[in-house]
Image (cartoon, rainbow, N blue to C red):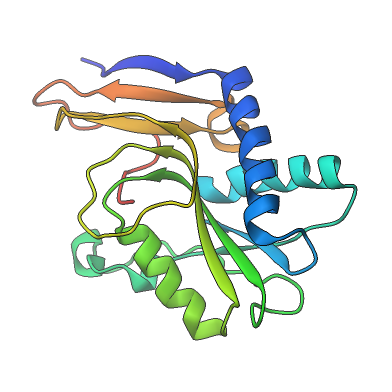
Amino acid sequence: MSAERIAVMDETAVRRAVARMGREIVEKSGGTPALALMGIQRRGVQIAALLREEIERAEGLSVAAGSIDITLYRDDLEAIGPRPIIGETVLPPGGVDGRVIVLVDDVQFTGRTARAAMNELMDWGRPARILLCVLVDRGGRELPIQPDIVGRHVEVLDAHQSVEVLVPELDDRLGVDLVQAHPGHPGTPGNPEVA
């Protein structure tokens, strides 16, 4: 038995949201000179790349970028097993000191991923400012961490529902689905929501 999937955003809707989010990032960061985008592994990296392309196209300037893997900063590390898969953290050229760092994630849920990302980022230096940008805010916060820039709010009230952001590099398409897992179903493919 498979999970039921409902498309929330197709590729056109995602690209439209990314265009708006790119403008908001530039406005909130006071331009691009000190700006650096850092995508949170995994799908946050692909969303950050889309944002970077959009900002560079609109502004005609290069934007620094990097990626951050929060695996070792998670507060549930023991729950994911003895051999967690650790992704790569790549700092933007010139590091993070004194910069406006935009942490980019696919889905904001509990706030724990954003907290872990900020903790790791502070171990690498002292940014002038940190902004949190997410493609989808699904609510359900456990920590008082709110995104500064949101592509779309999707209210999820059912414990058996999840939001999955799909990117071409990993899923062969760009979009956002609301996934309804049926009780007893072992889970669905895609990104686990720990955000």
